[in-house]
Image (cartoon, rainbow, N blue to C red; front, side):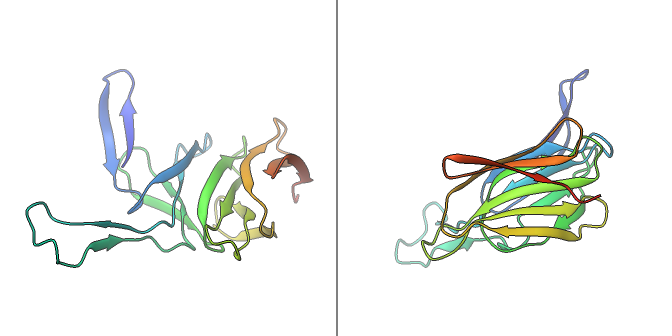
Length: 164
């Protein structure tokens, strides 16, 4: 559950079930005030308490290609869905000027690649998808001047210039 809380009143402003499974990473778009969250593509099963043990588990899964979403902090409504290749989100970042959203995604299967993704924050258009192969991908971060994106792959940190 993604919740926004008024610090002066210490009560929830909005509460929304952002993903069916877990929220893996969050960031705030300082320009719009939106909460940007990344989820996991894992499937979870649950059984209703007291139900027949032979009954099939109810499964919960999100579309693994839409696991980065922006939500209004006031009411929890979705403002953007950022599409891309599937996989669980490892990290999410929003540029200081609110222009870009970046995320790192890893697939759980050995034969599936990880990705570093960059979107236009306003249109949701995917600007870049770096295929990281079977390497482990870590977090992503923008530099203070919003000129570069840093991301971790295995035991190295890479820095790429942003489009202008």
